Image (cartoon, rainbow, N blue to C red; front, side, top):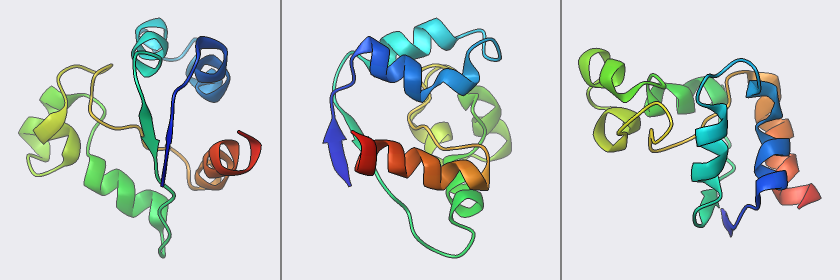
Length: 104
């Protein structure tokens, strides 16, 4: 686990896969550059799947209705301010950790 302060180019590079896919991409980049981010590497069997289950759906309103005990249901406010980022694909988990812990 480590704390990072992202600038706009770094946040845009990290979240590049979501550009053009998420309507809130620009707002997400702005949010990710407003203060420190805590980045964690989670290690366990099926880590991405298990962490996604803990985080819940990206939209906190959906999370509150379908998975009320998840992080996003408890701490999220909007799709952009949803409390936590977790990768979507198992193969991206390693890449995202390398981005912060090996490249940065």
